[in-house]
Image (cartoon, rainbow, N blue to C red; front, side, top):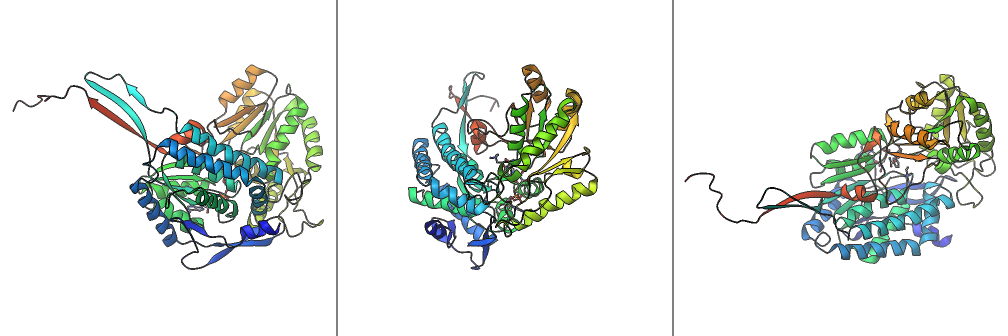
Length: 497
Ligand SMILES: NC(=O)c1ccc[n+]([C@@H]2O[C@H](COP(=O)([O-])OP(=O)(O)OC[C@H]3O[C@@H](n4cnc5c(N)ncnc54)[C@H](O)[C@@H]3O)[C@@H](O)[C@H]2O)c1
Ligand SMILES: C[N+](C)(C)CC=O
């Protein structure tokens, strides 16, 4: 543990290959959400710090120290990064738990996924990716993919390491240089990742990290004319702001935003399996998961039985410090977020919904200073209630009743979001029929939550624009160039003289 504590001391930003304080020397405390203790201080970066990073990334891009080397060479760096993540798995796992609060088990999965993501893009970038076209003679037309340039990458706090990697791995694989901003709430594992970049010898200026407030550092990245692309993951409100800001310089934009995802349980589903996944769908990550199944829709014939069993099991979830291996659900990430979630619980009560279990902050048993909330279940809800429509991003779920497929789909699609959705049924045709009607980018039949580096991740409607992961996730970081080669080089004779 001493070793781990040393690791978080003195967080710094990584700009142009050097570790730097903020130009003002100001810092902000980083808090362990399990006990409210300050674990470190992070530089409070400024717009000027961001500009230094942007110019370093621009210079590195123009010099071709990264875009100019072969895909094979870039891939070998990415493989080395993956190997280092594996080598430091225990340390990264503990840091992630300390920084974000998630359980060691959850953090361990994220670290494994992060290494796998680097390997996936290291492999993908060396594969054929162009097209040729049969156009009118004597022309040979083709398409090649090129890096976009300087990419601004802005991420949230719920998966501090993994959400960073989902952007950094494809951006670097494609030959871009980056200016990355972690969440001000969880800068610890991103900083450790950049130490790995230094260790494997990424050329100076290729990967830059600026810490600090969203409206300051994030805004500078989103608005600066030398940044060619913004890839953002975070709340829908922030995403809209970023899109507007980026419009002035016509940056490419990709947005992975919030959700209020439906999990539809039909009466013919395997009952215990459905209950099990529904619990996992909402309470994994303490509900702080973009794709959380925060609206459970249950066919009316099994509704009462489902609620009873779901509540029975929700009450048994062991909430505590993520560091304790027996903990099943950790704290919320910050005091501010705790207050937001508790506020939503009050809103639900005032709207007339019934709490079937939970509803309170957890104190006692050494949890007083942490940000713990009971697994909370609302029933007797109406579709127009705020707790049904708005993303709470905590361990709070609403369970609604539907009578048939048509009503299930109507309720499921009845929010501004469209990130994810699940359907539980033993009727394969019905499962696919319903899934095809969901206005959601990621769906599961008889499952909930798994993500795959190979498959695209992203939302419909106000849950975002563009896709992460898979070939789609790489293409977000590439320009497409059409090349036409005249095979008959002679005057065209269009004008007579
Ligand atoms: N769709 C997905 O894949 C996905 C994945 C993870 C999280 N999320 C979403 O993230 C949200 C939770 O994360 P959060 O609270 O950190 O989100 P947030 O929008 O508050 O912040 C996200 C990032 O944006 C920065 N930011 C804030 N204001 C900014 C501004 N004006 N300009 C530029 N940058 C700014 C923040 O500093 C942070 O780094 C939830 O809505 C969740 O659904 C979505
Ligand atoms: C995409 N995922 C599920 C890893 C993180 C969303 O919050």
